[in-house]
Length: 163
Figure 1: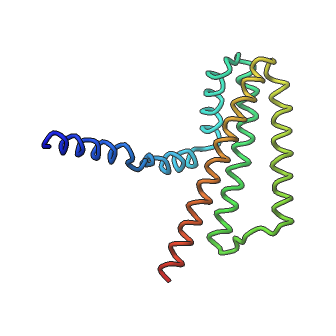
Figure 2: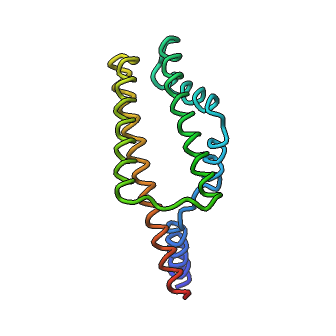
Figure 3: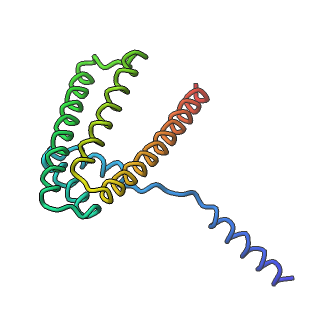
């Protein structure tokens, strides 16, 4: 009888540990903030070095890719600063449907232009590898966006319950 009780307790404790909640990495937000604080030059350099390692770029390709990434980083930084200034002034509002469509078109045009530039710089093998990496990142971003929506929905529901 004693052995059966011990075996049952062992199974229950193993099951409890096996179904423990997954904890998110604590430094996830910190890493994003650190990247946002980089200058456009630093961000472009880091990104180009990662691409060099991943795609095995030669020096000419490295310089051309870095120039493109620098232009993108500067534009991204300018948009962030503009958004931050609007937020501080209290002028930041949700975009209308028309503005969202316009922003989506601009983003897609930028992606198309980026693809065309990269196709000119990279050889076919490198371009295929770069395309796969871009698709993977887009898939991950889509998943994170879904997670964020779920979290926001849960917060709204909790707020309604407390009211």
